[in-house]
Every structure is written in structure tokens, then in C-alpha cells.
Length: 125
Image 1 (tube, one colour):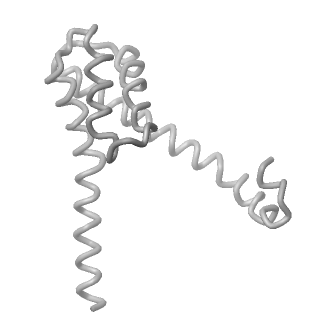
Image 2 (cartoon, helix red, strand yellow):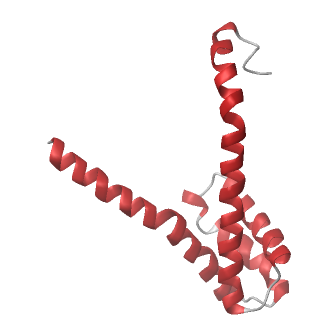
């Protein structure tokens, strides 16, 4: 609807409508994989149900939408400590879970990308 409001945007309306379901599917899959990873990590500390982990880590992931820290670091850990406390997971375990997933999902791919970026610059330069 928004893309149809301006004449300039009408040209991208049809391609967007074709791509939107794919983008939404990928986002849903990414979120489910994230929750699966959290559930697996949290189960190392204490038995927790899939639904319980998804609800609590969904609330924790909400902290990423608050733009006051770099990549949500610190804020995400605070949310995790708060929401996981009632499950028997202590503060150290909650922080370990969130930082582990941060390393897996953010730092490792960034390092791989940095390697290829540096390698490409050397070849081109």
C-alpha cells in the first residue's frame, strides 16, 4: 500500500510483492534457528522446554530493537538475566548463553567476511 502512494515507487511495487514472501520466510526461519540455538545452549545448563525458552529468549531478543548499545551487548544480557531467573538459570549462565550466541551468529561471520574483504583488497590493490 505504501509503495503505491507515490508514482516513483509504483515501479518497485510488483517486484517487492514477489520478493516479500521469500524475505518473510527467511526471516521466520532465521528466528526459529536462533531460538533453537538458545534452547540447545540453555539445555546445557538446566532442562527447559522449547516453548519456555522461545518465550523468554523472544523477550530477550526484543532488547536488540533498543538502539542504545552496540549490537545490543549488555542490554541483551540484562534482559536474559531477568527473564531466565525464574527458570533456575543464574546470571552467569544467562550471560554465557547470550554471549555464546553472539559469538556464533555475529562475530564468527564477521571474521570470515573480514578475511575475504582483506583478501579481495590485496588482490585488487
